[in-house]
Picture (cartoon, rainbow, N blue to C red):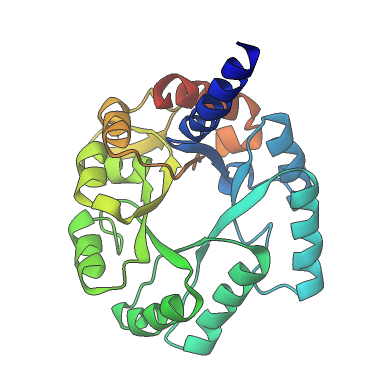
Length: 268
C-alpha cells in the first residue's frame, strides 16, 4: 500500500507543480523605483519578494561596459532575481546601433526588449534583428496622441511583422487614452509579451482633464475584465508594477505592497 501511494504521488505532484506555474507572474518596472540605484532596486525587490524585473536604462545601461553588465547580472543571479526585460529603449534607423540592444539582451539573458520607435521606417532593421537574435520586441504604449497610443496603430505593425514583435500593454496609459484594457488585450491575441500593472483616474480642473496615477484597482482601468481575459487565455507573462507618480516613487514601498496584494487577489 505505501508503494502504491508513492507511485500515485509521483504522478500527481509534477502536474501540481506545472499548474502552480501557470497564469501571470508579478514583476516590477523599475521606473517605480527611479530614485534608487541598481543595488537599491535589488534590495527592494528582495524585500518585496518580486523576482521579475524590467529595468530602466538609468539602473541597467545597455551601452555600459561589458564588465559592468556582467557584475550586475551576477548580483541578480545571487539574489534569485530575473531581469526579463529593459526599457523603454531608444531605437534608430541605423541597424548597428539597434544591434547593441540585442547584444545586451543576449549577454544578460533577457527575453523581451521594450521599445517605442518614433519613425516607422525603423521597423525593417528591427525586424531583421529579431529574426537574427530570436529575441522578442514589445511595443510600449503611452497616452492619447502618442505614437502607439491608439491600439489600431499597434495592430497595423503586428499584422505586417514577425510574430516575435509584440506588445508591452501599459494598462494605465491605454485606459487614459480612452480604451478598455480587457478589449485591447483580447484584440492583440497572442502578441502580448509584457504588461505594466498601472492604474490612472481622471481629474478635471476647469476645462482641463488630466489622468493621474493611483493605487492599482482604484482607478478607471477595467482590471476585472482584464484578469478574466487573462484567465480565459492562460496568459502567463509578467505584469510589472509601475507608477508615473512622483509621490509614489519618492517612497514606493506602500504602493508596491498594495499592488502586490491586488495582484495576488485577482490573478489567482
